[in-house]
Length: 229
Image (cartoon, rainbow, N blue to C red; front, side, top):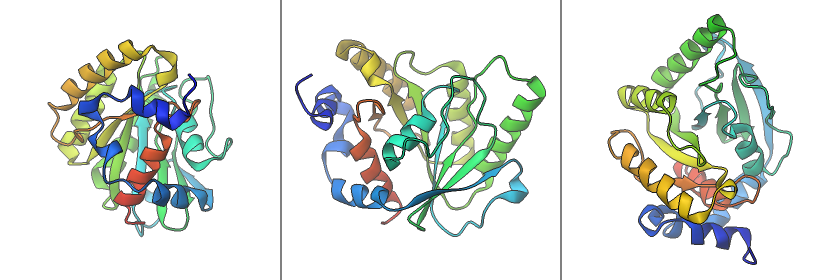
């Protein structure tokens, strides 16, 4: 553990999964974009309340407690920008964040929780599905999956929805610091195999740890490139 976090992240990335994070990415551009102002805009509970589609959007999706809020906070360098909670289903809205007046970051409601009111779950699912299917400026969805568990059935269902909606998405494995490197290799390989069967899935995985900072610089740079910053 003597290496710097981003050096350690590179060591953990399997060679066949890391082409995009090793080549052609301007880390400085990503750092510059995420060093700019980033403010909460609004929480949306109905599609009629969406902000104007006047800039690129990057959405963060994933199971409840997968670490979406922690990743948003780590990428922006603001510990309290997105709310984190140990209570499944706390994020019940589409939360929009204005990054540098150039990009919207969108934190989607978590899915896969069992204790929430079924009526609320259906309402949240309808909101997310409507957003994913109809948002013209949605550049990419970052689909977060806990590296300790790999893809679950609910993740596969979201992947199918994204395929049908023709929405480009990239799988982001989170909480890499919670598992051993050999376990990570197995989970990453299995996740990549599953992703290869889905037409809208990006071929490369993003491997991260919000707590250790692993992979954060590369993910920032990818967003900067996608949004032409």
